[in-house]
Length: 166
Image (cartoon, helix red, strand yellow):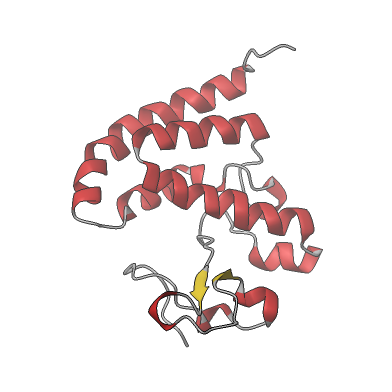
């Protein structure tokens, strides 16, 4: 198996590495200590187009291949695991799921267009903790799998950038 990067993959890795060193690394420790959401990193990822790297071009993304995505996520993680987590959920879990299993209408409506929307995932600990109810299963449940509710009804973040419930 040939593990050499293509010229395009190498260019992605080099560009992301430089951007991470310039933008993410200098702020990572301060953001972590202050428990601050890395908004400047997400804004920069939008401006550069990286936030849509693996989204198909027909939906406004970069159309990057899986190896470019892995190189991108690896470089983000080298700079700040928080930024890497946000982006991997956005591109991998949310956009990737919509791309694989969504209808054409859902893809057109919900695939983030080069990062103008940031995908997120809410998990909640249902009936867990000090108010555990006997005979009821504790643990994480996916509310969206049980009922189809508007996303606005599930406020799961204390981030100042999270949308408020309607």
